[in-house]
Length: 236
Ligand code: GDP
Image 1 (cartoon, protein in one colour):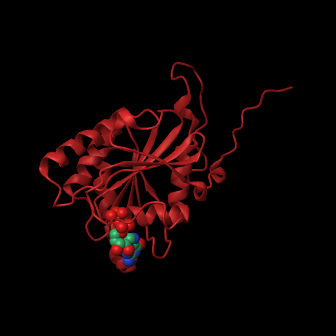
Image 2: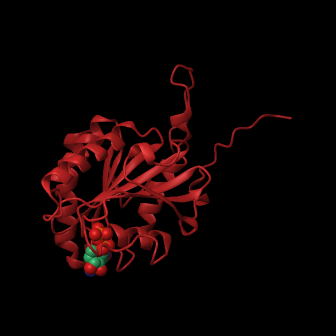
């Protein structure tokens, strides 16, 4: 009996439609057990985060589209399988939230990005018409200083014509290079479902990445991911 390690890419195995609500948490200390893999979604209120999660999971009700932005500042966890989760972080940047609450939340988010062991990557959503706000940059800064990959979704891409959308994509990509090579960016539209496949591929890569479980001291040449040919995604 040979012991064979499954080296086949397992990107097709995640069924995002299986996502079910697990629990909410007000901070890291009441989050679900920190095991397995999870991917978090963050963005300014109204960036289109709930719509994107609902499009991805094909569940119109999973993530509530923002009714009172900034009021319920909870992290929502959804399970995809026993050891894979999607995480909906509270929207930020809502003007009416008191400063003290904003500061507390910044602290929680920073903690989450820097300490959560099971977190494999951050999907950062930005309205294509207002990309890279100060808080967006702060989030990228926290994530990159924690060595956390960030994938930017330029949402509501259907609101711009192809030319301006492409040039925004290029300028955001140029800015991201300054944060190192763990960043990528793509266009996305929940309305048209554009960019959905690229998002699914990115998430599957993160959620099935077993290299994170490898012992870094073991001398193993390791297989680099040959499937990472995501043409519409701009990695660097
Ligand atoms: P959230 O606050 O980040 O969760 O944002 P929502 O998902 O609630 O979306 C905010 C607003 O943007 C809503 O009115 C949505 O209908 C709209 N929206 C979200 N995604 C898209 C999109 O892809 N295209 C267009 N045209 N509108 C969108």
